[in-house]
Length: 352
Ligand code: NDP
Image (cartoon, rainbow, N blue to C red):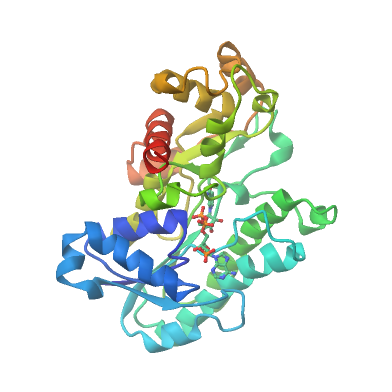
């Protein structure tokens, strides 16, 4: 069956493309520019024998701005028989100087409404499931960071509001854009009663290798992967910044990709928020993993205070319980150590 994947050029979406192809789905990705389409098709074709036999299993269409009105109408109108839609496109950047509302809130919320209403308008009879990439941001209660009795679960909603972005805080703007986008999705289903079933995937910080080594060659990686990448630019023996944020929850990008495909295979995941987590992390813990596994970096990057890792993590960082999600999927998460080792190996290989 056919799957429409929005934001197909993204870090997570490239892994989703891979997961979909390996499950035998036909993939139609939306990207902003033709060069992205050409490059991705070439990269996937180089490693996929099924794609070499049938290049039409992966195609791309252009959607330059998900926030523009009726952004997805044309695609849904002109592509028959789409069975599933995965909506991952959303701004996750911190280097755009336009008004915060235009950078984050509009594309996130309008993009979500646009895709859902286009499905209902033009593909209500064919689309069975829609998966929206939400975020742990839509669950997180940042004011409970040091409250060990507050447990983040699939039922919890973020308590930030757009008013709090008045000071220009981009982090809050991103978080609220994700919360409002997810709310818009559930509201749409409730009010518009489309035929499709909705699932959201709510990952915290997503780490792990890029789908293709070429993307690890860049000066800086996508926002979340760069948190691991930037530790390779720290100074020996220590770096004071290490003990600031982030201290949060993480998950491997390959698990996040899998969680986007599971709702297409398992009806029990319909109408659920899936909180997919590997463990708590701190910059210090990631650094420990790098130092233990890459002796060639000894003396070149920070060591910090490894003996403080557990103590610092115990004081701060969100408590969580995602046993509902794990009970439904049975997925054993890839551990942080493998995630970090695979990422660093790739960065070293790509930049040799
Ligand atoms: P990327 O920045 O790599 O991917 C974002 C994707 O969205 C890109 O394909 C980008 O296109 C596209 N996009 C952004 N804004 C627009 C727009 N206005 N019009 C059209 N396309 C747009 O980040 P990730 O892969 O990390 O993020 C993917 C999704 O996962 C997002 O919804 C994000 O919020 C969510 N998420 C990510 C987490 C993480 O830690 N990485 C954690 C939780 C959720 P282009 O490539 O052309 O810029």
